[in-house]
Structure formats: structure tokens, C-alpha cells
Image (cartoon, rainbow, N blue to C red; front, side, top):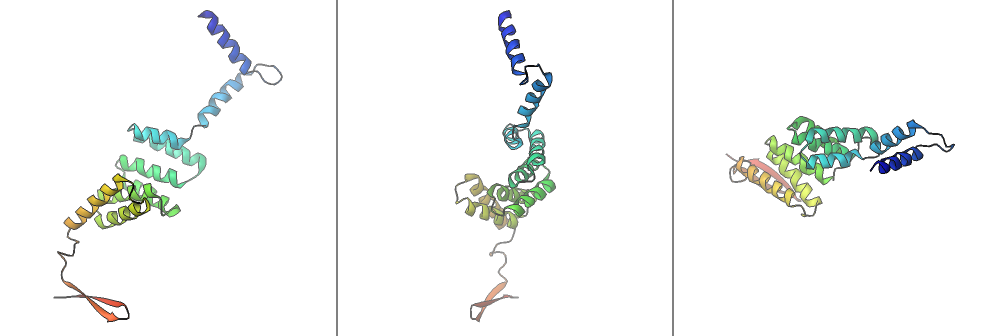
Length: 183
């Protein structure tokens, strides 16, 4: 066992030698720091989110954004982490920034819809889920369930046609219509 540690120490020293054959302890610390910096903050953040460590994930996402700039992925991930932390205002702000960069980014649309559900803004939530569902081609069961929830709550909130029968649609010709309130 003692022999193993001696061999390992010699290999470590050999790896730290410069091209001129001199030992440089700085190269050891540079390699360790370089390998830590090579890890993508988004990947680390996604793993932390899966583990339920939302605050740590948020830090990893901010680190990624500091290194790579504000990308749609980083902004959306920050919004998602804030959503899981219950910070709805911050989440909405980041998700809207992500959608400004890419209006068809399905995860940001879905998560912004969830923020709207939390704020009981059913019509806006339903519209966001409809868009996400269409862009995703209906593949995501999660988006489908979110859309169903938003539509069910939208109907329960009094915004349905059954409760607002005091309007009439009148055709004015050439494909024009006029919406009139009836007594």
C-alpha cells in the first residue's frame, strides 16, 4: 500500500513538471481550477433542480449566465428555479426575457403559464399553454395537463359564454362583424 502512494506521488509530480523539466506547484492548482471551470453551469443547475436544490441551482444558472451571457436557456432556467422557490415576480420577469429572445421556446412558455396559474390569471395561462402545446406538437403530457387545468379554471372563473349571454354578433357585410351588448 505504501508503494502505491509513492508511485502515485511520483506520477503526480511528473505531471506537474513544465516543458523544461522543472516542478511547478502552480500547474497543479491551475489544472484543478481549469477542470472546475469547464463544468457547464446549466448542466449543474439542471442536476440540482432534479435533486430539489433550487437555491443552489439558481446560483449555478447565474454562473452560467455570467460565463456565457444571457441565453434563452439560462434565462428560462433562472425563471424555473425562481418559480420553484415561490418567487413569482422574479420568475415572470426572467421567463418574459427568455421569450423576448425566443418567443417559441416551449419550456419558457409552459413555465410562464404556471406563473400565471399561480397568480390566477387563467386566460393568460390558457393562452400560453395553448401556444406551448401547439409548438410542442402535443407531445408533452405535462403541458396537456396544464392546459386542461387552465381551461377548467377559466370556465369556473365566469369567463365562459354560458355566463356572458348578453352579447350579440352582428354581421355588417364584407366579412365585418360588430359585437353588441344586449340588455
